[in-house]
Amino acid sequence: MKDFPISFFSRLHAPKQNLLRDYLDFDIVGFEKLLRTKGEDFWQNLGTKKALNTFHKAAVEVPAYKDFLKKNKINHEKIKTVQDFKIVPPTDKENYIQQYPWQERSWEGGTHHAKLIAVSSGTKGSPTFWPRGEFQEAEAALIHELIYRYLFDIKTKSTLAIVGFPMGMYVSGVATLLPSFLVATKGYPLTIVSVGNHKNEILKAVKSLSFNHEQVLLIGHPLFIKDVIETGLEDGIRWNNIKISMMFCSEEFSEEWRQYIMQKAGISPQDIQRVISTYGSSEMLLMAHETPMSILMRNEMSRYQKIKEEIVGEGSLPSLFQYNPYLRYIETVNQELLFTSASGVPLIRFDLHDRGDIIPFRKAEKVLGSKIHSIPHRWKLPLVALWGRNDYTVVFYAANIYPEHVRFALGTKKLFKKLTGKFTMRKVYHKNMDKKLELHIELRKGIRSNKEFAREIQDSVTENLRKINMEYDFIFIHNPDKDLRPHIVLWPYQHKKYFKSGLKPKYILSETDERRK
Image (tube, rainbow, N blue to C red; front, side, top):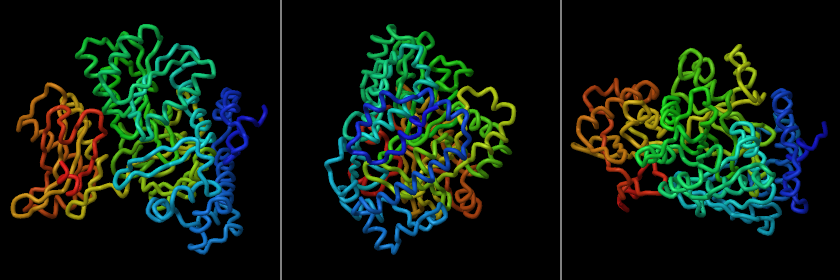
């Protein structure tokens, strides 16, 4: 086999090469065969070599990174091994991105290589601009092609892909539309409708176009797609007569939630790979994604506490994805994920402040035992466990309350039949200046608020927080004279104050945010 499927990814910043043209000739079948036959050490070794090459190239060609290393007294020529690489200081938005203009963080300190500029809203602060070039788009297309071809079977089924991410400046919509279009140009029976996060328009597209395709792929944030499915049922759409698949990003969910949305969409339990989530960011686009193996692994972890503890220890159930170290080199330091990527703005040991861990393929293989042989497209790649943002919490009586903990508490079957899943939280002072954790939660269309249901939610959230958040459980036990249960405020569907139509909810509100309402 030629090395073309491998050499394509080693080009890094190559302004004089037509990478998009090369993508159209890319041997995706040969590459997928390597994923099944080569062990994870093969990909890890390639990833280490590429990460070091990216580091040295950035140290010479990127003015901002060159200055960053100088300030931290790092001579890049002395960094020769993976152990050496670990002494290179991590970068993040605060110590690097916000310290240098984006032009200086780009290759050769210029803008002429940028073909596209995306914007990230982040979890707080002002927008950040992220230039991209042909390399990132070709790489993103390859990853999407793997997902579409081997998980959603677009090579044999005519597919209508409906992109339900916001289509403005922010990254998710464009970062899905462009690679999907490139995949379609390779001759697949794939048609794309770029709708944006407009529920009624998506339902119109389904009603008008789905009959002409063998399957429909809904792409968007999970809570938004849940709303699409539920509203479609109310409008008379019989999803079980349409072969539906779904691809999500940005928001994690429980396995119980996955089963719920599959049942609503008429997807049989045997087709669980038709509902997958992805792990991406504005900085590095799509970094990892669920596979049949990662989904099976997470289901086992959700069912058996012993397996979960063996894999990730105590605490809440993380999202679980497979990733290729050659495409995204990932390290863990103090349970934070560090990424090295040859992006339009090259990032070296970049800290997104995502809490996570790396799970070797061989460890997952050992835990799954004979069950692993039933998995289609068993790629020998490591997994990344993701719990969420480390710097994105409400500090409540010294306990860090993470949005993902609340999200899982709301993800029980008895609750999500009446809730959209959207919420926002803040720390407020109630009577006697006692602190309260206040949760504002959106009801499904047609569901009315009542005190009994609010108490039911309060009990569920309190119970689940105590189970998965040791800090919260500690303060709960040691402050018996205080009512530390969250205060629940229920809002009508798409209320303009917190849940305006078309907007992704802001999970944590500051006092400044509240004054603006």
